[in-house]
View (cartoon, rainbow, N blue to C red):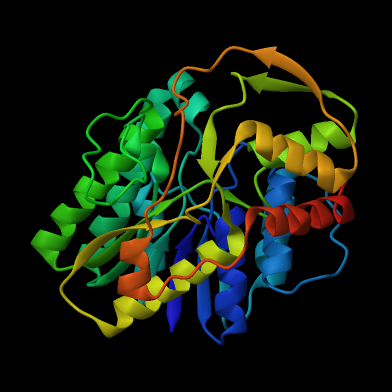
Length: 342
């Protein structure tokens, strides 16, 4: 099968591309290598996901990405550096490459940055996503997986969060754009018969995690004996989900899409294991064998207090079965981090 992944050089996307290639499929990766974080991280992700382990000599961004595209190109892998906001640039890819199914992971991510740059988040997460659905409509691609987020649940009191809950009260622009994507997805399913699964990811972590996310950032700061900005009293809690379990959920969603027709579904992908910020920090300290130096700060606007996934529907519909508890997941992440420090 031929799969198009947007954001295929990112954290989740590179792991998914790697697994699809191992399973004998073809991958078309569209990633814009934006400046949200150091582009060299995405270069390394891409090399790892395609099995290219030769030393890569970095020079400058433009040349490096061209070299990367050439180095990784094969009969079953293509890398395109494009922006999903530019539909005219995407159209030749859809016209010239056979695409059986789209897995849309590209997005501007992060709650706090979205408060500072709300219009950028709208243009990427809503307009960019709609461009992909327009191209699927034009080129009659009928199978689509889209990344949503647990952020859509906001600060609702009902625990755990279920797909049937009311999610009309987001508390950040990022969450609002993800909710808008779910609504627009239903429009394209209804009007153009695009079968669709939207996956609400719950705080994904593991090797290759983005450096701005808490587990990676805290690990780096503890290992370097630097002060950690610690927001709130430590009671905020997350349903942390290990990357291997997320990839398993995506692969099972793909299988379900390929074997069924005429449906639109929203699924939670989490672990149903809630960990407080304080417990997350102590687990990292134990794994690293070092104590953290904390700078206590007030809660940040837009942060939710707690996430907790009800994964009953995902278990029933696609056979989702997360297998990595938080302690083991952190151990694996720390081992990766210590072996990949630059």
